[in-house]
Amino acid sequence: MSTLHGHAEAWREWRAASGSARMHHAWILSGVKGLGKGLFARAAAAELVAEAGISQPEWTAHPDILVLDHLPANDAEEEKKAEGKPFQTKRNITIDQIRRMQSRLVTRPTLGSRRVVIIDPADDMEKNAVNALLKSLEEPPAGTYFILVAHRLGRLLPTIRSRCRIMRFGTLSADQIDEILRNEVPSASAETRAAAIAAADGSPGAALEFVAQDLGKLHALMLRLIAQGDPHFELRGALAEEIGARPDRERQLAAIDLARAVVAARLGKERAGDAAVIAAHGELVKLSGQLPSYNFDPGLVAMEVGALLASLAMPREAA
Image (tube, rainbow, N blue to C red; front, top):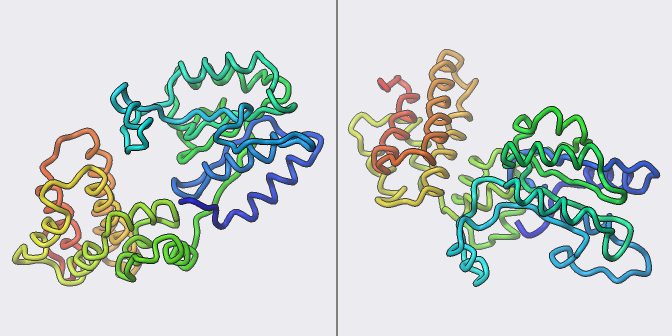
């Protein structure tokens, strides 16, 4: 997502605080992934370090904006990054990154009186990195501010949360996300947009990722499975074919997330079947959590997803 959307209230809160005499030194930007919290953090940091009469570079080259995010996984992935190619990252933000950042804090800011440290996402820090960061949050150097981006606030230790002011980012409506998709991906069909909106849980960034996966046909098949069942396994076969014989992990996870959204939308529509809906949703969440760690056969994963969807059809098909 290249631009910020739906953050007028967050900007009002941030600018009221930054214009006061007692700006809090540490902030957590909390909300689901894909809302633009990282973009907000960088734009807010650029505003905070800017001072009248001093020329300011873009945040990407600003010496007083330090961004800690996922590093390339290895030297080969580092080369891909340098060449502008897609690259794999490490799973966590490491203690070495925190220590390198802390070594910078012993000096004064370069262009003005303020410096901003962004950790994105902070909920992916290693345990030792969290403990090291605590020292800086407890005794921040003068003029240093921290912005922690958090997709899952509960994963941050209470000792971190208690030292930060929390700014919560709400999800966007379906109409707002549809407008973003129309503007940023005008070539996307109505079918593709509908699938992306259904799966995105109010996150425009997630919706854009789903559009890239082109899930429109999958969405239609999933709706048919829930509506009709699949006594002859035809729809499950079509589902597996649409996902692909050798899908990458991202496409498999996108398909499961879409199925989870389709199932969640059934809750409350047939009170007698809510227990089955909740059970199917739980299985999809479990499968989504297992997929990154286990080498499941893609075809079997597709059939399992199809079976869970078909089990919610009326009359009920045995799961």
